[in-house]
Length: 424
Image (cartoon, rainbow, N blue to C red):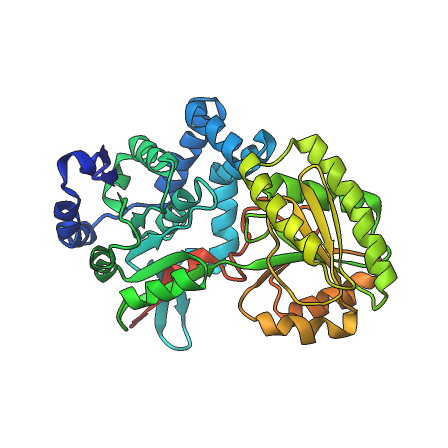
């Protein structure tokens, strides 16, 4: 299934995908040759109208099954959907582009500067969040680019539906959005798409980013939004209310987002304090699990086997608290690692003086940290975490949706734009 010229086409039935891809470069050049391009206002208006249709329940037949499968609450969905509203998108553009939104005359140098789109973007999307591929395209549109989207494996069809409805709201967008369902194994076809693009936007882990680099030559920019690791850092001052808020975040995201908490570092050298904090968090995690409803049965079954094996092989200094499909693994090392996901969290000690030493090893893979401590502790700890490489310091809800928020420490609209200088 693809989206081409504003129409959803079932290419599996008529085997026309290669034909459409072969004609893509000429179509994009034709669009670029037009004197009038799409405006940011057109994009925002179309998104806002579509947002209100979504909030009115028009697409519930798509949305409710996705929320059920992903274990996402309707409240969390509303937060994410609001990012498509006029108010949020206008704020995003003001924050990310700022003074770039208008041409700037440099009287000293006798030149003018203006922001222009890169041209054509190929988005290679990840499948961990339904709707994210569509949002990536919208960011490309806000910067004025033509956008080609390669759908992730197992895509539900929600992104194609959203983008096709966006074109219905603003028909001028038809020439700026193309969607193809090309498997990642078809590298020759993907290379054709990459040859059309000025930049490849890739979402995923190191393997996906490296694969994207092999699709391109030196003329094509690669913009990587890679998989990241996020965690919490707490001190003895952390309250049970804060631990419950963190536990709610773990249950609501099931730890599958880049901003999801994988584990908890406790700012101490005392194994007793680490164990006590782990026990306190386990109690709050059980409460949050009961309030949110249990995680996917298949994931619980997979993890129960892993945890049983860990219990049999538990090393000295390791304690595993396990009940009702959630677990806390209290460990004696300080190594940053991914958890088992789906409500299974590790707890380790990491005194403040070791923060940079331990975390700097993971440069490029760090994203968010929920810093839960006393107010007087916060400035020093936050600065150490930033120096170690973290790009977001948050409260207990590490994945709260926010307009104007950076992607992994960078503004996407700036990444998708270029500054053009014109002399007198």
